Amino acid sequence: MEITEFLYQIKPVRADLMENQTQEEQEKLQSHFLYLQDMLEKGKLVLAGPCLDASFGVVILQNTYEEEAIEIMENDPAVKGKIMTANLFPFRVSLIRNNTFY
Image 1 (cartoon, rainbow, N blue to C red):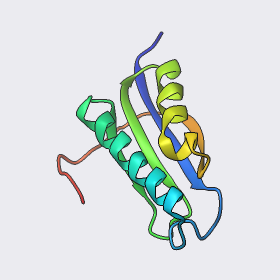
Image 2: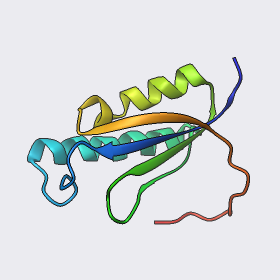
Image 3: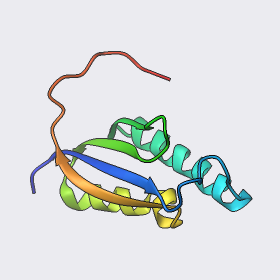
């Protein structure tokens, strides 16, 4: 098992999800954020965020192996809750600035 980095791309199942959410979808998105925040605290997350048109988001994982990365992706509440689809890619962070963005 090789420990490496992975990126998973998430896409809303419908185009207007970010502008027009049900209460249940809002709760799943909040759980998604908290889940990724937990991955950050555990040292598994490099960064996560949506593109500004909300057509997709990215999650970059570190210090993990493929099976664990798949498990993290599949257990993401937005994916598990079927409001987003996800695809996993092996990835390498080659350059990174030492700042936190909000």
